[in-house]
Amino acid sequence: MNAITSVVGLKKKRQFTEEIIGEEPLNLPPQSFLTKSLWFDLPQKAIDKIVRTRLDLRGGLHACEHAVIGILPLFALCDRNDIGGISTSFHPDTGKAQIFIYDAYPGGIGIAEKGFNLVEELWRATLALVEGCPCRDGCPGCIQSPKCGNNNYPLDKEAALILLRGLVGLCLN
Ligand SMILES: [Zn+2]
Picture 1 (tube, rainbow, N blue to C red):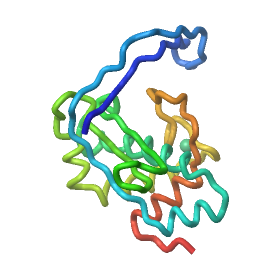
Picture 2 (picture 1 turned 135 degrees about the horizontal axis):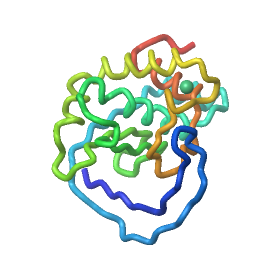
Picture 3 (picture 1 turned 90 degrees about the horizontal axis):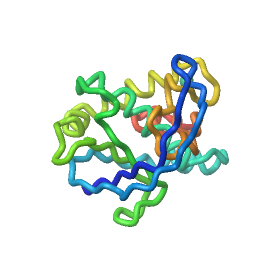
């Protein structure tokens, strides 16, 4: 895949508390590179349930993407900063909702490939993480990402759980 990243600004955070003490916009040209990506479909039953229960599908996909990126380093022995992700409720090339997980280095360094080979295990471990996290709406331990380009918006933990349960084949009724 062709990944495009852009640095849009920087935030100054207080050490340890993560409190934001300053923000500066930057105007840098986007960087584009070819890399390897893992991508997967989401079960239609899970999507239907999210729509039916009026949860946020985009938030669920985004949260699921973050959680997978948080877990993948355990399998691929890398840092989460080595991994990028994109999620969309409608991808023009496939005509459906999609989650992409890609190597954040030109040409790829084998992370997406590793994830692909272990994808069912990856989904199960991600579900266990999100399900087991005691927070209500998502926290840095489960679905929030420290390097999200969209300020961790939108995120929907409940919708992410439905998607992950669907992915591992659990009954969704
Ligand atoms: Zn949490």
